[in-house]
Image 1 (tube, rainbow, N blue to C red):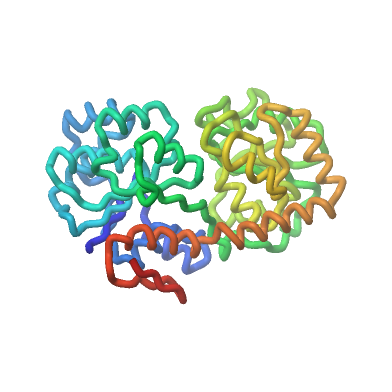
Image 2: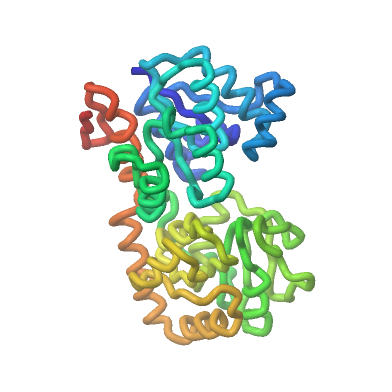
Length: 366
């Protein structure tokens, strides 16, 4: 079998791998996957875009470049090819074009938000389940939804938990120049920094956010407050700076707006991997589950008073903060390591084969 990895965005996986070896950034799981499977990497950027690429991109809510890339891949494919697509924005175009061309490679596609109206419509309208062999999701509830919605057998659903590089994001010393407590956060998608500002503007803390700037607009939310409090700043952090921000933080807060796919999970795992206490907005799915497991403190959406109370409580009780951080750290090491995630992906993609694939000391057979 020949393996392929199709990227939604033009990541340079080789540079990621090089940086990881040098300790400058975390591992990229798809870089590791490509090496283990000797997979061909496909990315956008070098394909001519046609009129029909633009038409279908508008219909599917994708980019024309993703359709152009898919068109370039399809002629190469046969039943001997196994393809992993890390998003529906590349998986759906490939499924449609393979269907039109009469090609039947083995296609595994990650679906981030299967409940999304457009995703549901496209799946039904184009009967994409006839050309997608396995739907890859991060939550059992998402898998259950797809299985019921498309009437699929259980072996066509792959539920693999999120991961973080616990070798890179690890506990470490705080910066020597730290003068007062730090409340850290990161990310822009579905974020609610307006509520975070309201909860902390008059506290004796520094609020530091890894984002492009305070002028950035968070996707799916209002972004930052119009007036930025004196104790809040947001800027770009490289990977090493982000890791140090976590290590310097007394608390990591991940404030999000109402959403259906537990936004902020990556930041939560990175912070817990650095053994830091986490306060997280409780939204349906994984975010609420983490609260119920006692590895984060959950607060209601948009509730600045509850968020402030949670922050002050942890700052005033270092022992409880340390215990919370330890519980989160143990959960990440137990369930969310990069190696475990990699092994699970390889198991899915080699289920079409008979030859064993080895990951470290672990061997997988179809």
